[in-house]
Amino acid sequence: MSGCDLFCRPRRFGRGAALTLVFASVLVAGAATGSLPGDADGPGAAGSSRPTAAPGSRHDAVARAAAEAMAEGKSPTEAAERAVSRSGDRWGAVYSPGEYEEFEDALDGRYTGVGLWARRERDGRIEVTKVQGGSPAAAAGVRAGDRLRSIDGRTVDGLPVTEVVSLLRGEATGEAAGTTVTLGLERGTRAWRETLRRARLSTDSVTVQRLAGGATVIRIAAFTKGVGDTVRTAVRRAPADEGIVLDLRGNSGGLVTEAVTSASAFLDGGLVATYDVDGEQRALHAEGGGDTARPLVAVVDGGTMSAAELLTGALKDRGRAVVVGSRTFGKGSVQMPSRLPDGSVAELTVGHYRTPSGRTVDGRGITPDLEADHDALRRAETVLDGLGE
Image 1 (cartoon, rainbow, N blue to C red):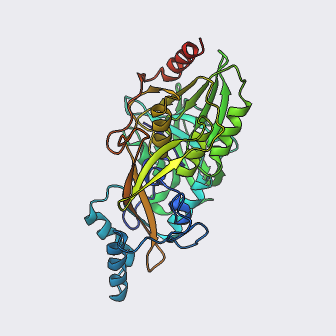
Image 2 (image 1 turned 45 degrees about the vertical axis):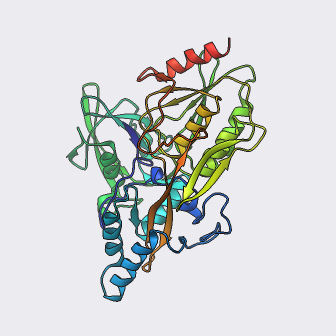
């Protein structure tokens, strides 16, 4: 499993515990606007500064618990967290106002960190896989391939990537931009310590490269705002006679509207997914005019989640792409946010989505057409060559 100090898998956290940005917990744009796609007239419509949820939803129980706690002079946020925990909602979470603001910043592609991407190797050691240009880590000379051995004196060997991310960001202690973090690093036989100052950074969620064989690889790290249009532009600029590899490995989701726009780059309209909100069935459709002719291979893995699975399912079910890699994570639930009396935000599951053929993703994931592990990109290129014949 891999991750960076911007996106990683969600986990439930309590008051004062580490905040892990939860792109995967947000299937719909409601996380940023309080509304679902195509629901601009609903509660918390786009443009609303206060997320709300429809009366009668499971949010009511959490809101009541918070209001009662406030009336009794107790912490409404702690009461809400207990209510979420009792509900059994795997993806439910409660955010302080500051945490939710940081979350929304991340949806805009902004975050606080040092600019490292990392993964845990099979032996449990943590390897740096990418260093963001212009970041504190880049300025200090940290390189991809370096081993990360400790953070502020704590050994990280064997830790989940999510916990490593939390330590890098200083979440457990509420650290912010301008604070320092000391990394223990190794490169070959050299071992050293590097003290970096955390900074507010922006990330490019979409990167484009040409393979030696001529194919274009479009990698989407997360569905932040504007990603869909960036993908469509990249497809238009790719040589017309060459195929495309859509790399969704490690993509933990984001804004489903951006995933739908990305799907529109490869589809000429039609169904992308269906979903339900408190039992009401709805549908998401691609825009017309996408490139439906050129060969397309999507690459996925166990870190492909949520909105990234929605896009994968659409391209697979519509026969538009061959999917290569390993089974995706299996996060196909819909969350909506609501504001609590103290200004914190509760985000609870209200439904699930399905692929165009009606398949449920939640808890199952998407099985690729061709299994591949470490050589997934090379296998994808081989498949692409065959599709172009």
